[in-house]
View 1 (cartoon, rainbow, N blue to C red):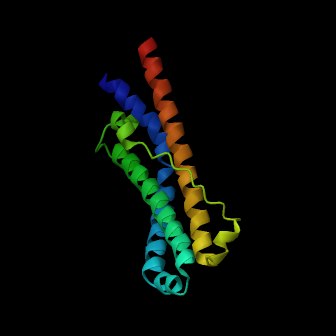
View 2 (cartoon, rainbow, N blue to C red):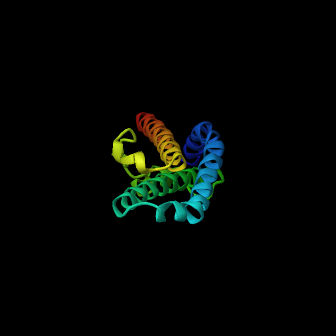
View 3 (cartoon, rainbow, N blue to C red):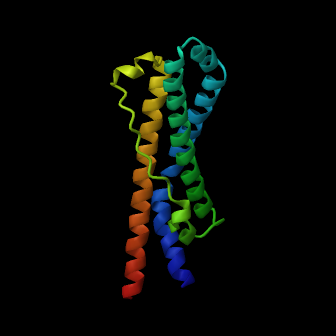
Length: 153
């Protein structure tokens, strides 16, 4: 059984090796977002009307949720790779990225109040989230297939 777990981790590491660049990218994006929202973003928000300020807050929340969810899952992968947690823990629904679908249509005219920086952050965070969610789905599928093979043998 221990050998089988080692084989799972080795197979999973084939996918996990791609997480380092994604992690660095997500972290850089999160830090940039934090700095923007804590500095220039505060001033930008003050210049918006009440309704537009709500749209801005929704955008800010969406960016933060998508990036922190992505980083969280990538950190779990890093923990598996370093042997800090088992691959079985990564398969657990407790560590699954939330199903999050942005219902924000950036072409919608209500988002015209957002500046280019916020629109760019929305696009990048959404792309990052979707990419990491696909990666998670691939890992889960691979692990399920490996578990099924183990049951057959």
